Each structure stands twice: as C-alpha cells, then as structure tokens.
Image 1 (tube, rainbow, N blue to C red):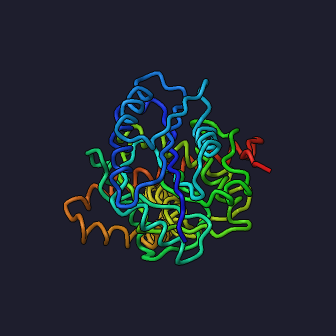
Image 2 (cartoon, rainbow, N blue to C red):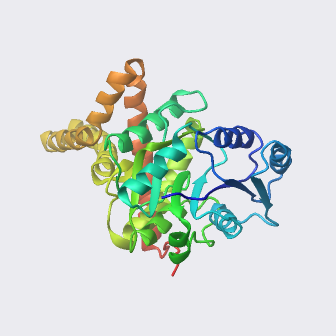
Length: 335
C-alpha cells in the first residue's frame, strides 16, 4: 500500500540537534512527504533554525506553540495539521538512517500492522561510556528478537501509526507533561486494545543519550512513573528492557549486595539468598554480557559495572513509585 507520510517532531530548546535531525530525514531513501516541527515554546534558536532550513526543504512546516505544553501535546498538535495518512514520530535529537522509513513501511505492509515502534541504533551520537551502555542495552533487548513482535509501548522517539488509528484511539494524552515520562506507555496500552502494535528491530534511529549523572536521575524518575502503569494492570512488557526477565534481574542486584553483607554477619542462610539472587541476575543479563563480549569486548568490564549501578537505581525507582502508588498516585488514563 502507498502512503502519504507526515513526520512529526516535538522540539523544545533543540537548537543543537534539530538541523541534523531534519537533514537526515530529508536525505533518507524514502523521505516523508512533509515534516512538521512543533516548537514547544523554546527559548533558544530552534524556530530560527527550522525557518532557515525551510528555504532548502519547502516540505518542512513549523508550528510554534504559545506555551510550553509537553511532548504529548506537541505531537498531538502536529497531527492536527498533518496531511499524511501515515504518521511518523521522532525526537529532535535523533538521526534518521537511510533505510529507516522504508523498513517501517515494509513492516506495516507485510504484517498489516496499525502501528510500529522502532529502536535505537547501537552507536550513540554522543561519546561516553554511559551513552554507549544505554545505546547497547536498549538495542540488544529489542534486536535479540530478530523479527517484529507485538508490543505494548508506542516509542514516540521513533514510531509510526496510521492516522485513522491515531484518531480512533484518541491520540496522545495532552495531560501528560514534560518530565512525567509515561505518555508512550499510556498511549500504547490504548492502541493494543483494538489494533496491532509491533516493534520492528530494523526500524532504527541514532540518538543522543544522557551522561552518567543525568541517566541516573532519568532511570530513577522514569521507572518510578512506569510503576503507575505496572500497578494499573500488573503486567510486564512482552519484550525489551521492561520484560519480566530484565525486571527481575534488575531487582535482584540490591539483593545480591544485601544478602552478601548479611551472610558475613549471620551465616549461610543469607549466602543461599545471595546465590539465588546471582542466578536471577545472570538469567536476565548473561546473554546481554555475552553480546557485549562478542561485539565490544573492551567495554565488557564497564558494561557489568554500569549494569549493576543502574539496576540498583531502577530498583530504588521502582520502590519509590510503588510507595507513591500506595499513597494515591495514579497514571492519567485517557478515555
């Protein structure tokens, strides 16, 4: 099936990345018919840069919002003025690969999918051990499936959806603002009620990732808000880094350290718990470490250390989110 495509990019203070993102989209083998940049009331030169690029690429459109409203609202406003019947979404700090759009369209046609989420390329756009770890970790947990598979989250960082499906499901929830970080999960849960949502490992973008300090706070915050989703239906994701094996492995790491400490104080009972926790951790992450060993051997030591650190942060975030849930905090569900 042939589609008229619209790429929608929410942008907020994206002056350092928006130009490369737009140029990569226009230079793809099958570029979108139109690109809509929704400037969410940036205070930098984002709009100026987009307007300058419009001179060379007339199918770029700029919509500047009158107040900062968050990524959900920005995407939804972009849909309102789009003319395509197939909507692509990406973030303003990504680089579109040459085959990104064509791979997605091929998957939609082959599987008759209503929506497709993509993944990050294993090479980050910015340098650093934390950035490399995040890129490889995200990539492995989706690419290990080899083929498209049913999924629960609509990854707005890189995703596509038929416009009529977007409209029937109600689109992004505008009440979810910047920093709340559960708009993609909430939207995905509504899509899969009546439609087919897949993850396609060949549908990729390169991405800028946060440094160690930023990723630590990001993991803690996002996992704590993800717990609102989890407690709503008590279901892990069917694949990816939020699947049950990865989730259990992350939660086992604090138990490894605690049980080892208590085994020195109180004896063999806690040593048994330590061994069980190690087994759970390896069950979730051993294949990831083997993947690193085969592809980035020199990075293996750092990958193990970072995995342990972020597993502890994820566990703390999950506990904090659970406490807030019991305190009455709930996800905002769009009817």
